[in-house]
Image (cartoon, rainbow over all chains, first blue to last red; front, side, top):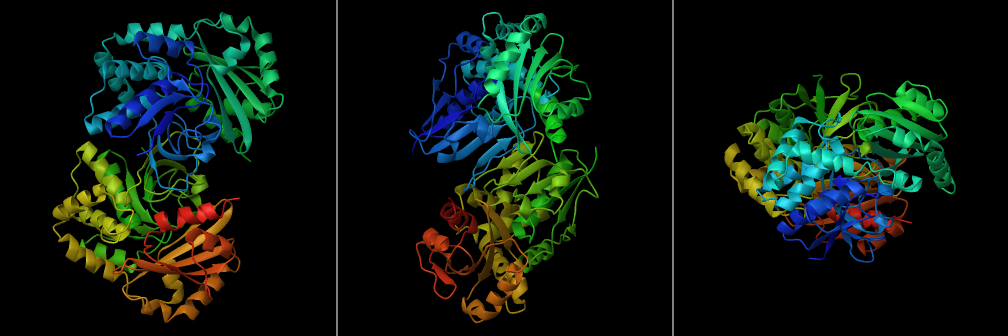
Length: 309
Length: 309
């Protein structure tokens, strides 16, 4: 059997890296020759988890077709979020927890998505169905993925299943969920060491919304002032990425992970759609998003609807 | 909780009807208010199975949004194969075994597809994972679906899982797999009673292949002569459907289910793509397809590739 590369989305977050590692392990248990790789460097939060559980960061690839003919996608399906030459390889597996958009295959495939807190939670269920043991370090990474995606089980994307799975994984990984969880989240909020470009890229995705290309970056913080003090620099960096890009609208979602609250900087076209989507006015390229923490559940569907027609 | 309608594709086959019935049952076990419906009358094969297991044919719907806001799709995902107003409802579940094409959601959803012989086989695994019992009549319908889609476990789409599942379902349904299977398949090959239009519609799907609309009807028979004697009438009926249609190419796949062999009538544009796809020449609107029995595995990917670029 020829080799399968397993990877998550561009600008990888903890769920993407952890799910690639976990699904690679799962495929090998099924008898496949597979390798977990990544489409970029781990962010600081992910690096903290990798170090804590003593796992090496996956090798970074730019293209896939030069190495393999088949790939497995985790934590994403939209082609613009995937490897650049995604059209030149066959996708045989997708494990995900996002909307489906622009994803197409010529052949039947294995596709497993559930509307739950993290891709790692879906994978946990798959391990359980097959009665596969999860090694402690892999469990630690999967737990980190759930903590990261659900902001320690507080995001509205969190389900009872995620909660139950997180406690089981914490046991296998031998960590205290709350204590480790807060340390992990804080590891991702050290913003002062990062350039504005790094802030924008560390968790950024492009979405096709009825033909409009919309980029949404999310910055987690424990203090809004760490971001607001750099507003000018951030907006300038956004403007720079918009040159020579087909992105029409760029949303920088800034989330206080302790208060579970957000605001956003918005740059580009379609400000009226932004205001319609969130029932708030944009002042000076800024919009308040009280109670919002989830890009997937509280930003993407609303903006997609507002950009229709 | 508001009601969910569960349905398969247009021109329903046995897998589509049986999977709607089985998934409706599954959703009700999960506590949902759901109803299995259909986008057309059962064909003769499906009618035979429904009568054998004493199950009523699902109610036929034309549109969904007038009744519900959420739907579950089984045995398909491509919008042109679905209910006409699919864009006006939210798809919350898909259970399938086909390629993914043109399917889009704004929200995360439950999507479960596997590259195996029938949607009913995927559903069987889901029942097993939840430890849900399958009532004898539902098991009989699921078995009929596997027999129909795999031509009694002989199509190249058949996996070891389908085989194992079929034997288990036959036990629950209290039928002899081979005997019941042959009776079921033969029930679908009574062609003489059908008009050419009925022959074309009983198992017909439209595929978007790189922007080309391709319709592929499959007619099962135990004797090619039952079809070849009506060639002129069939081609005429195809030509009639092509008027006022955006379908460019119509393939009528005729399969001998005892010999596991096919030929096809091809009408419309892109004959060169047809010849490239199957490495055979088209003579007098007819192409030989030795060893072909599966539209999904032996026709759609090859034609899709040939129509690219």
